[in-house]
Length: 306
Image (cartoon, rainbow, N blue to C red):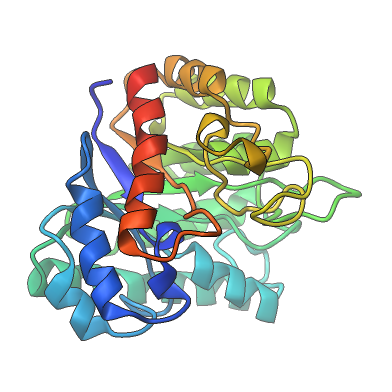
């Protein structure tokens, strides 16, 4: 494995649900100190931190960051089903672009006011079920024109809408996202999350094929390892986007992401810029040390497969 690894900090951190600056202050540098870890994925929730932006600017480690607004996007979609970069409703589309202007401003704040740098910003192709390629292409041109301080823009593919099924995200199919990038003619790539693809495809082998398809497009920038399960499990209901661990690290999770499918996805992706790991803390993880141990076990599987 030659590409650097970004670890998602917020699924591992109990401090995002119940603010604990001491725990978070221990966790972030400890994650960065794990073998092979280059940086962190952090959420944009309408601001740089859900509890204390000044604390975050002062304590975020001096590493590359991936900034994801997916928690914020899902809240906006829940409040207004017209909202999203791929919306055919002009108000809903414009609102999503306006929010990304806020993200870009906060990227600049991070670059200027902290020791970290922003390497990747993920975009998401809401709304649910009703997205359109032409609307997304228009949005991508507008978003690409913003000042991102050199950060790489990527569309993070989430589970696409499937008629007759209640989706987790229900955004555009991968082929439509690729078509919109090509139509827009802008330097935006793709980012895949194994678990979100599994939620869409309901088949671990089909995820490998989707990774290969994304790689064949020439647009694949990153692939994050995160599991999903077809049955009720300690992390939640079937097909929830709960960032399940790799199966061998917690068999009770019923995660479809096993060691063999990690290796298959790595091979299918080929030579890409970034790998990611998005593993939730175990239900009984309460301390920073517990969460770091969980991430370390999952990280060891990815590194061994590469």
